[in-house]
Image (tube, rainbow, N blue to C red; front, side):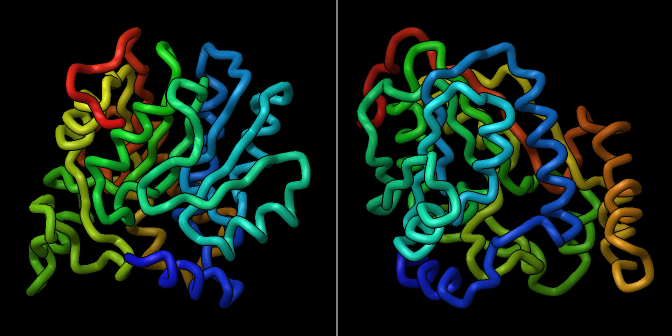
Length: 260
């Protein structure tokens, strides 16, 4: 999708502005937990695909002494992020290119970005480029592994499992901005090409999230979130979640022929 596509979305004022949706509320809780479990004290943190800075307060709370930078392809979103978070730095990306120096980032957070980028191999290569040796990436993206409830629902509906331009495929139930869904092995391969090793891979949105999502009109959000988070508490290591969260570490030396 073009930068203009996301400029228009953010200009409308309702795109990715909070955590009032079931999936977004649950994702926030899991991101907070993953950050809390990291044994790192980063000096420089990058929010990759930051939008209007929804995760800035989460990052500031987790790493109060770090310099936090956000980057996004939407100039509209970046301008709004600057207005909301005066103590952060926010940069406009040129496509997949991250506008920071090689090896300058200690911790990178990428929340639901890789399904949107035109060239996912280049996007992950850029993540590897900007991380310092030993730097950590926390990446959340939808998961295409078989036998999630979402996969089954799409498998049973006409046009549910669709091809994508780059061969990964996508779900028919995904919103138009989602260009692909990666399987967990696809993500591991992409990260390895960029010089990163997956240290932890967790999965969310198994049974309870889908069920309470279907009954959203009858239950208050707080209760639905409590029920949906049972998926995370009980089955975060089961690979049939509809979304995945990877913690990956940059190798001490760049991979041969890696992206630049």
